Length: 114
Length: 114
Image 1 (tube, rainbow over the protein chains, first blue to last red):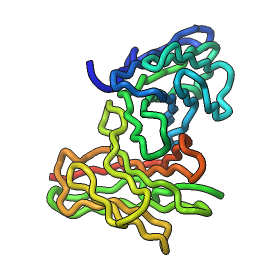
Image 2: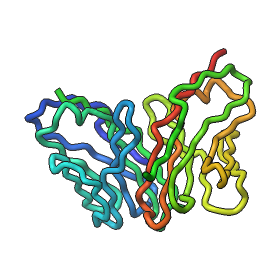
Image 3: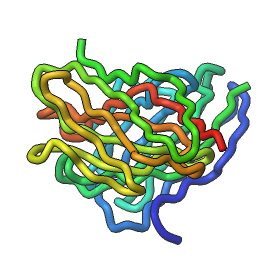
Image 4: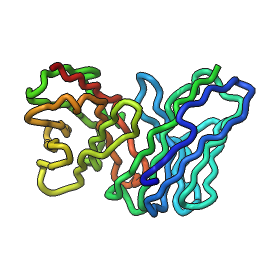
């Protein structure tokens, strides 16, 4: 596979469930990102990892827990979510080196919290 | 307040007509500027970016954008729209000094009439 892949593509979960989103990049990049895309709101950066180290956490609630075991994989662990967390969660990757490095996005995971 | 604004939520154009999507930013110093496109069920794809130099930037799929410092704008244009251009378009900025903090506009949805 090429590019950035995300699984699952769709997820429905209850507020008491625990689930994980997975992202994998096949581009040899060393930076990975999680974004949240809600209806009628701009895309929001959630987390940034550089060489497996978290460098950005934009005031994201603790019910979202990222994990980056290596530079090719990124997870977003979810627990006790709220209905307002329903959104499209996008993963991206890039070379670490500043904004001139293009971010490549995966297709996203559509999450519905009931 | 710092912001990136896309004034048009939804635009409809006829196939073959020209297109201009507006983007304005409000930052103390000119940020790095980007345009992304998102087709239904897909992640975001970079169309073009501007850092410095020639203010008219050529991108993929026949798109171009013009940076106008006096108007704090970075409008996206295409001389002749194709039905496959129907998608959501996002303007994004990376403020100077915040190399991984990409801020997105709310997006403009483009519908193409036959």
